[in-house]
Image (cartoon, rainbow, N blue to C red; front, side, top):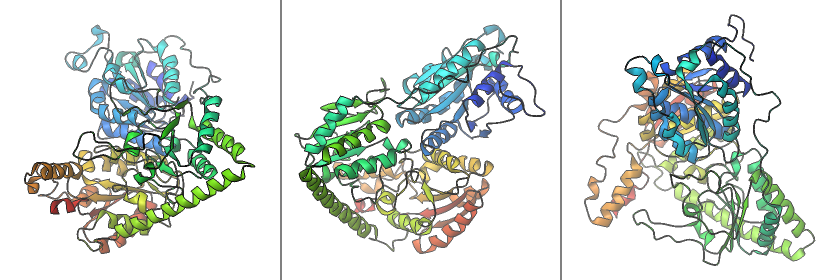
Length: 594
């Protein structure tokens, strides 16, 4: 039982037990939007628990979940607690929970319902806000949910949920607590999980025989490619990938769901899909969806995929077949693999590296083949970055500036700082131009519109107090969904540099309409209808200031941006958020000129 601080009462309400569990499992923060269904728990957190961990007020349930999503990614899997108000709060949060599930982000979601006892329900509102088995709404995209009927079931189910959440592959869990139960007094002793109980099972080691077989294939291969997706989510994964790649001299494609490999390493070939044309072996390392990375496809045509040669072999180590959704098809097309070594890459990659070193030691011909391949990949890598640097300088003086120019201007002012990028990558331009040299530089690329400001806040919260400069390249359409999130940053003093990636449009869909207009011979000048964010132009700097966030802009000319960015960085270093509104051209504006 937690010891109450001075001025607090002893444990006497059933909701106090939930607070003891939150403390026992060492959650650092709770995000929430208030709701009367958990008023008992709310009171216990403040008055019994001393508001430790602190409740952080969010303007929308989606933001509450997204902050937990970003926090877990940036802290290498440390979960946050989220509280959602009965049925309606849960329904608000469903999209964010779905994205957390497909992105393998652990979070402990607490809900409330009822009272389930019909005689205790107030007229009208308690009926509208009560559902039969509330977790049914999100059961298809959570790892587990439970709704205990009495306080006796709370400690055991809490411990089970925590263990399930952090057993690979990670994901969200949902615990729903009856409103009446929370407000009942404690009349008998409720046993808590013993201090000695294991919180999370040990990671699973892939079958040693399968690892040996993969090692044999790798040393025989002439053109292997390493494909990594979630390896970098675990501490040590980034470094393990470097050692594996250097041992075998294989090029690495980083999926960008996490930062798996340093982009400036000579063996990095991410975004060069021609590497797959000659591949004879692709080694998938904790990969869920192979196809997007390995195949070329058309924006407008359905199907028509072009991938590696039919003779290319595929093997994998990871968790692709565990926790696969029975509902959403985020797993993509199944890749036929000759070996599937089910288990944790945290253990599997170091062991595979050891097996490879055994085979390489004393084998002069193999060492020579690896050295030759390393030199060839290095040459290819250097040519890639030279090409991207030249391409990024095209239309340098455009007003509004190009996204590539924006990437350069931000890089010039942060490159000497200890920086972290939150989510958006300017259509991957920052991954092509910046130097991602440390595992914490980027917890993974954005998920989609109406996710990025919340995830970015979570990344910034995870880095609060670290001395690192957190940078959010913030899309305008995304912020329009959740503008109130700026208030969260100001209220809770979350230091982050928000640089607007403002092309005054929901341009991803606009681009689709442009392609379709060309395909159907319709008027391309009408493609913006239902997509544009101008007339009027949102004043993001003014919006930021109205929420208590330092704001400047808009800046359309790249020449004017640097001084503002430097001023904003000083604000961030003082422990507060700052926003600079940078207006860019639309990334494929040339499509209009076809």
